[in-house]
Length: 420
Ligand SMILES: Cc1cc2nc3c(=O)[nH]c(=O)nc-3n(C[C@H](O)[C@H](O)[C@H](O)COP(=O)(O)OP(=O)(O)OC[C@H]3O[C@@H](n4cnc5c(N)ncnc54)[C@H](O)[C@@H]3O)c2cc1C
Image 1 (cartoon, helix red, strand yellow):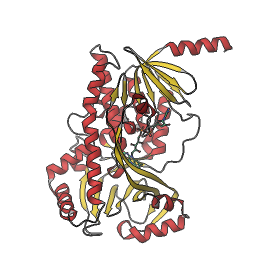
Image 2 (spheres, helix red, strand yellow):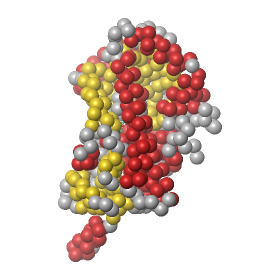
Image 3 (cartoon, helix red, strand yellow):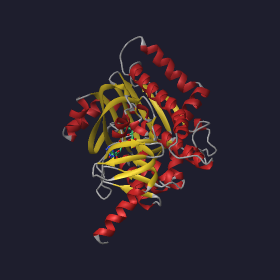
Image 4 (cartoon, protein in one colour):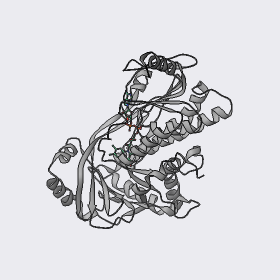
């Protein structure tokens, strides 16, 4: 293509008004792009990551709950992850503060799901890298998605009928709806002037994959200690991903230690709980932060995923909450089109805010309360913790309610998360 044609091609592209411009192609932004494109919308996806470059190593192992997994099936992603997942068959918890290494409380099993398919697991354990790789491939293959990467969102200006987006490269584009799925620091949220509330836990979580000496049977096991939880999350084969909460600095130091020293420390603390463990690959550490955006929307703009809320990962709900945002936004966009409404209109954004604001905030605060209750040694908390464990594990209706809520299978969940 000669230079004049290339320039006029770029100008004509940038004259286009996309239905949606999504900033951030992490798991929530990519899933949203696929869902909106499947609904027939034109979508631009902007990300700092070069799609041609290899993904960075990532130690997170996501518990993708049933509702989220149903959405990934609908988007064509689940089939691509067939050999990468470990079905999650149950969740056990031990309150190490009251009866260290006592009998575990069986919190949830498959039976509590009440699914039409009795073999449907509670969810699927998937490592962050294969999930992102599958989403990237699907975006590449999809019609209706223009990927603009590597580039950086710089600023936005909205008018009544569209929003103009300026990128660091100097490129500009227009869309009816701007979505910030650009993670915890969200430049989109900042540019919209949306404030955040929350707290820094001054703790970090150490992650590592380990070879187990005891079979995991598809069960995620969590030990609550006064310092914070220690969890083994099942992986294919007799392997698990660890999430070990510690004071800020300690997790970072342990992740940087020679593997043999880190392994000795791990086994001296937790071999009685989980059996002997052997670390595979590199350990990583992530700071724990609670952060809630005070608004989910701005003029012609919406936030999804960590841009809207960063929660304590103790119950594996962060990405699942983000996927709930995605499912709601896809559902509301489809309804808007069906009713002849306009993408990005105040009515559409109000419907999204109503659907997601309180659920997301409620979950974040509930996880914060669990962390405060279990991650301390105060004697007054012990009876409440014991009662909570007994209630959650022994009272069937409560247990079923919690399971369906945690796995996003309760009545009223947004379209793409329903059984279909
Ligand atoms: C240790 C740990 C374990 C976890 N386990 C679970 C779990 O089991 N289950 C679960 O549901 N959740 C879990 N989470 C939470 C989960 O990791 C996050 O909720 C999820 O990754 C958020 O995804 P996102 O797409 O919203 O944001 P991100 O993954 O942060 O993606 C943001 C994207 O935006 C891009 N971006 C940023 N700035 C710009 C810019 N200016 N211009 C263009 N692009 C930009 C970035 O390049 C990135 O690709 C865990 C978290 C931690 C720390």
